[in-house]
Image 1 (cartoon, rainbow, N blue to C red):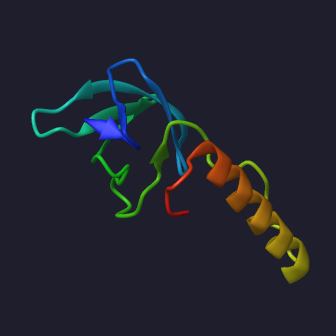
Image 2: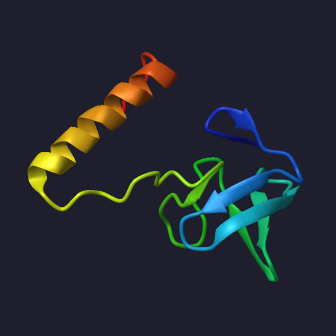
Length: 94
């Protein structure tokens, strides 16, 4: 199984938007990652989608800055995020 193009292996640390820090415990026969968050365990597909039906699993917390309230500040923040993403992952649609 891969997440964002990287192999997912047992023992890998991951982050879920709902549950926080977790650890991959195994990969199922059908290619899903089994992730433990303390005593709770959930499975995710290769898109990072688990029980909530939307992507929530990432390698790290993707929220680096809380979005700004004002439209002008938010617009600037989005432009900066896009520029950074373009440098880190050139050619990918953001």
